[in-house]
Length: 124
Length: 108
Image 1: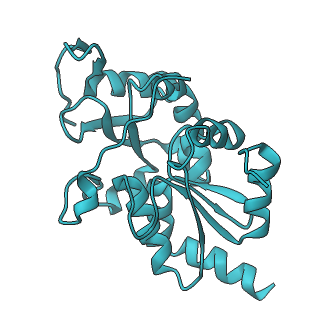
Image 2 (image 1 turned 135 degrees about the vertical axis):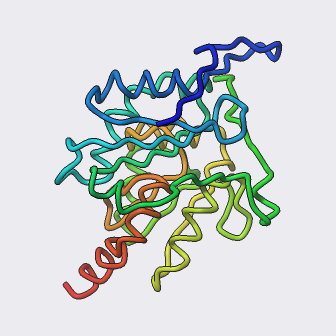
């Protein structure tokens, strides 16, 4: 598994926190330590991540219930807009070996609306 | 009568409609790639769905997320139950589970 090895948290002059792929991986591992985790920063913008999580714990668990613990862990990062999008792929080892490329980039494509990126307003 | 994004109002939307998509923008003009993906998945099901544009009111995102206890948009509800976001929708569409959920409910 290839991980990005940038510094875990980078401060930008835009006065926002940018987080790196390895930080996302580490945070996911806090929730599900036995998993194989990889994260992809979709736009190198430090806030849209595709995350593949492979664990035998997911056997017999429905998709939303697989995501719930991870989402609740990331809830504060999402509400502070540190992480803008988390695209999660939670798979059992069998599902992982049957699945190919799972990265979906919402801003990569021919559809013109893909280019629009609306950030949640911070006030209130 | 005004709409105030209260839990009761939100619950009524998902109770009254078999498939509901809370999204950024509309299926015709999605304002986010993930919302676009969710709408595309639902468009492929042979079943009408209701979409709610949560960019029309700044109270919408915090209200919907608190009510559903799900932190991101889009959110898909089928038969009053939260299914998840666009990643889960796509996964369940590819595995045929989504179509099955809708067909099962139709035959009841």
